[in-house]
Length: 277
Length: 297
Image (tube, rainbow over all chains, first blue to last red; front, side):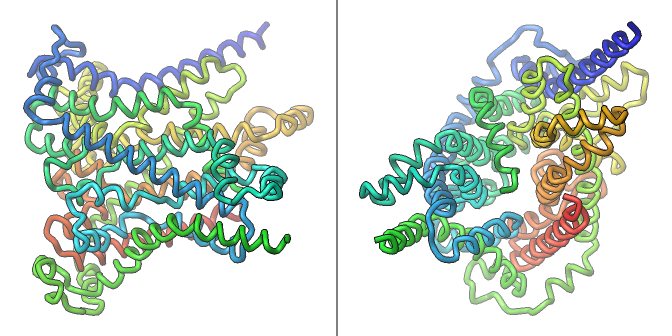
């Protein structure tokens, strides 16, 4: 009896702690949504409101009509989708080759790529800026897209997954006379679908959320992505909290929805990327 | 026949690797090497107009760096952020993972989703939100303090609190990601180990100490290395929340300083020296962690 009681107490304590953590995780996001529907000044009144007294879409209308956030939204979608599509293709080709094709120095190339995973991308930015400037890519889509078209992490992830593909299947296709690229297209890609979904979401989110590089490359207002537009808005309208929150919702909502829709793949991808071979 | 097939594979591998590897070489590896060369020049606004205005200055930028109090301040802030924010988020993550993974816990997916929501959000957007949560007069944090009868804190305006406030945001944003990794690590521990320990009379704490923690060593290593590499590159949070570098420069990070020198004042040579110093710090820190924890992992 006593034992059962203490187990009940433990279960209650565990759930209470988890609930507190979950609330702490969600309250800032909930407040962001709530404040975005408040009329101007309500979030800064004293005492400030927690829910809008009369919900309004004014802030969103303002964002699209006056502040041209529709353009930033379109840029963000375009850049992230392009980077995702191209990098999926190039990373799967390289990852599969490193996992399954037999050639000299394969392991050495792979080891080199893994070692390069620790290189911080910020170190590359100043010369990269000069390079893209010389090529005339500053303030163009290319400036954002080019450096993201292949990634070490993507190659690594695909390689880890492709290791589990059965060699017999690939060899059987070779005996039947299929070319290597044919095998890649009709056997490897379909079998790698789960990791393609994971990697696709990673890449899209990473590209969408990226801030420092688009900030550097896209000074032209018409090319800016949502995070850059939001940061600029903060510089000009820092006192208009409700408007800022609407901008934050617009920036965060697409990635949150994407995550909720593909949660399983996303989390499987994370754990696969961390597992040592 | 067989060797013919092998050369076919090698040829295909070459073409499959070529696009990705050349992009990485040109847009990632080459710029990192070039950043060292750039740091040996006085490349500035005039050189931006015409590269011929740049001169080779040897290690002058590094000498200037060593004598620049702002750099030391930024380095100190960055280390404080890594050393306080890193362990704090790992600790919260491990706690959350243990609780989510406990046998009695229900609604596991729901909790996991809640913890993970901040991870996928855009840093700039949530830093904007938190900047207002930290508002000294109307922010939620000070209202909560007021409710329990504590004096308000000037979160982002007080040099003693500003960096800590950024650490708190980082914990909130990142612990869900690390928790997922810990849960995966926990699930990989064979149940038979715990059974054997229980038969020998080990209590919950002993099981945790002698089975759970040692089995999680590889996960710890991975989490520690990736977290610190990420935290050393701290930029968006101070850029959004304290655009001027915070009270008394207390939130100025090395990456923020590099951005300011390189892209706002166009001192690209000096900025590259800052970037390369950060690179060296990250490499040494990673090396240290691999040596300290790698043996046990």
